[in-house]
Length: 424
Ligand code: NAD
Image (cartoon, rainbow, N blue to C red; front, side, top):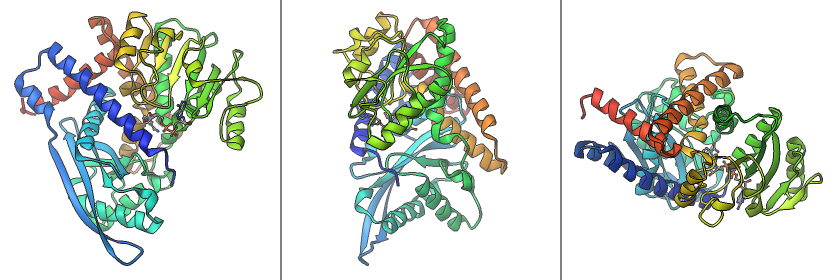
């Protein structure tokens, strides 16, 4: 199973939650929410704590604790990942489930928000133990998930193999096929085409729409991408294939730059052989700090949180920043960019392409009708562009940052659904 740097991702999540919550509290006071609305948004609808036994390879039984939180499901079944992490807490799961509700509302897909997971370090488990933990957790929460209740997906330390165990265990309990109970499955077992690169491509569709508004010419702009993992590498590759000039990329070991544009396919091969983008032959090495402040038109942070901060924001030369990573820009840097008229496309919109294609996977499962890649991409594009334009219009109207408009739009949608249901 593919295991990323889980400590980093967990820290990223905490920053994301902190930023979102501070942004939300200022929106709450600006739009003047009633006490009833505040109360409704303040607490999750349902939080489950489960304890379940697993027989370990030693033959001994060990108890595990798992969580599942449905933050809000006024707009549709709850949707959110399952993570396996030794430091998982119920509070963190609650925050993340709220962010999922907001993200689904930003791109206007008919889902609420949820999150869950098991307190475990999967690195310490054998493959068999990992499977037994997954199956034990699903048996414990089976009554609280389902295609029209709550639909899990991969998250930190869980992958498509684990999604298959989830599917299989749930189907054993229900004694029928229920592909739509979980997304992020392999294409050969109910998964959707294009899901693996949907986060990056969704961001690029938004970027292209923003460029149109700014009259930026595709063949004249230069782009720098920080991070060369799943999201950054796919973004650089797709941009290169579309004919954009990607002049700089980086990973944890450092960055490279070539003002005439990098051959991203060759950089990918170089990384496969050497383990890093550094020392690629047709480029000069730079530091990650230099990448962030290099001469370019578009900057795409796709690695870590807090990369753009009060120490470097004034030196950023890009005209546009697209946050494919979660929370790469601090509040201070966000304000500096707004003053400098640098367009910032916020994470809650820019990296929502993954959950949009999860929604398409769910639709395909329910209809037992599987789409060609072209259809997935066409619908992803449409969804992302509509979301961008709605947020942009709200920004124009209020003269505010795109992050604020995105959250405001999401809150309005959730509260409106609650009102229609008679809960407000
Ligand atoms: P990943 O682990 O696959 O890749 C991370 C990349 O960042 C690696 O290339 C790593 O070398 C690089 N990196 C680490 N430290 C760095 C540093 N100091 N400077 C520059 N690069 C550094 O992770 P990913 O899945 O690509 O996720 C990247 C970001 O996107 C994270 O913030 C994640 O939360 C967010 N995100 C990912 C998805 C997804 O679908 N994978 C969806 C939404 C948001």
